[in-house]
Amino acid sequence: MSIRTQRPNIGLPNMASSFCFALHAHGLVKKPSTQPHSHHLTTLLSSTQPLLKELQKLPMRIDVSTALISTALKKTSARILDAFVDSVFQFSDQELLPSQSNFRPVEEIGEAVTVQCIEGEIPIDFPEGVYIRNGPNPLFGALQSTESVFGRSSHTWIEGEGMLHALYFKKDAQGNWNISYKNRYVESDTLNIEKTRNRPTFLPALEGDSPAILAAYFLNQLRYGKVNKDLGNTTVFEHGGKSYAATENHIPIEIDLFSLETLDSWDINGAWDRPFSSHPKRAPGSGELVTHGVDGMEPYFVVGVVSADGKKLVHKVDLKFKRNSLVHDIGVTERYNIILDYPLIIDMGRLMNGGSLVKFEKEGYSRIGVMPRYGDSYSVKWFDVEPHCTFHMLNCFEDGDEVVVRGCRAHGSVVPGPDVGQDKFEWFSKGYKPIATSEKNSDNFTEDGFLFSRLYEWRLNMKTGVARERNLTGTEFSMDFPMINNNFTGLHNKYGYTQVVDSIASSSCGMSKYGGLAKLHFDEQDNKISKREKDSIALIKMDYHTFEENQFCTGAAFVPRNGALEEDDGWIISFVHNEDDDISQVHIIDTRKFDGHTTAKIGMPQRVPYGFHSTFILKPAQC
Image 1 (cartoon, rainbow, N blue to C red):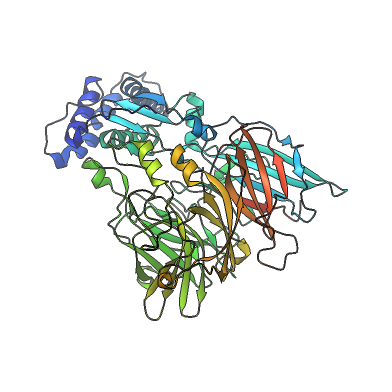
Image 2 (cartoon, rainbow, N blue to C red):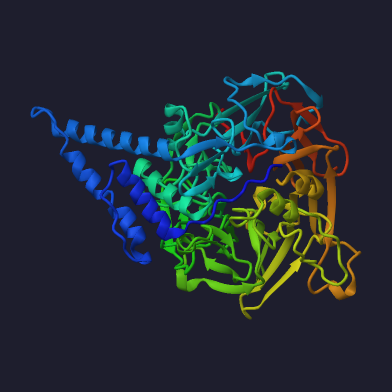
């Protein structure tokens, strides 16, 4: 892998001055003044005002309407800004290693394709419905980086445009299975802008040199009214009979489940005006949808409750966070909303002082909040816990005086990656390294393996205010992307499932690869645990389903059996890619024969890249 020499950090004062002088040199703004450091950003923003005034002086025919003049001014301004960006910023494709080949994007396949290649048999009592997975699929064949006078900035893997991959399960009149596959981009407003222009236009604004990110923020906002792209690439969820693609930098985007056509953004009839969680949860009993939204300026963290039919926002409250924590998930129990607050922080002040926009502050605090369903900021009971990063909760429930929270916990964060100046590949390779079980330290936290994730349990006593936390899965396997039988969301569950990281393959690749699945038995303990470790670790029984060599899964989901009476009666369904022959399949695995053979392997008509989250949506009764 080639190592790029980092540009020196030219600092905010020089960046602001250079930016303003560059605009001035192109005749776009007045010459910037030399003000103290604290005024440079103000100068940067205010210096564009003369541009608008000058544009208004352009000669126009007297009989042209005001509306036409306004349109002409906007078009002229847009052309000038585009010319400036094109002359100053150079886009380039980010290259992938051979071991990263299945992170490459694919083209849309067009109309749904009937699938003929099936090994094994799809069970007769498998439900009809749609297995649909979301994931990043860069529009122009690769993620983009830019070089400019401000330095370098790059899109990260989590910023590829969203693409949906759907597998449709239908039976004919004779009870025979008809299976078809389709994929399609989530056509957000920003994706359509770039498709129309047929080239990358949004400047990367998450990872890179701070001056370049600040310039990207400013120019993206000027040109498009938003600082970054609307991705729609993380999850798919269903609520009120409608399906949505979501990423927490934007509100959900409604999709037609069968055509995969993008319909409209969902702002809950105008009541929700901020980003929306990628992992909203349906509350047990009421069927209401509990969500949260994090934003770059106050209010940093807002909780919302949506009616069961999806038509009304019944509760919305600012939790008055003092920092901008990039929280990915939210939990529910029968009475409470469960709030995570960990030190993955978005900080514009740090960015303006030459640091990164997003950083996991490993010395920062972590806490978990228990909030009554319709409570306010003062009603939240906070529990201090050990610093960690937990992107995904498996489930939460009430157990007597305690609220139990289970999630995949790591010592570091994969987002956004290393600080400026560090080798990105080396940083991720060290982070994914396996951790050997240690008798001296059940967590065995070292400089390597800081992205190693294990399932943790926090027991929060509502009477005493005491939090007990423990590692449930040891340090043999790293695991994430947890799932359960969704009928038990917010209720006591005996079983859970996760994707299991192949730590060696991930470390060699510098990106996460999942070489198997785990079934977790929460009510059964593994007897291998030593007496001394019991306070900090409680190994539960785990069954493993391991894929063949160089095969990795993505987007696993639990599908209950038709008429099932037991929680674990069903299947795990997942996309699986064979890196040796570059062929993708969907595997169906019986959860009661978990470490045995695969029930069915369904061949895909084209390669399916690795992605994020999925769901299985049952066929509506009327269809």
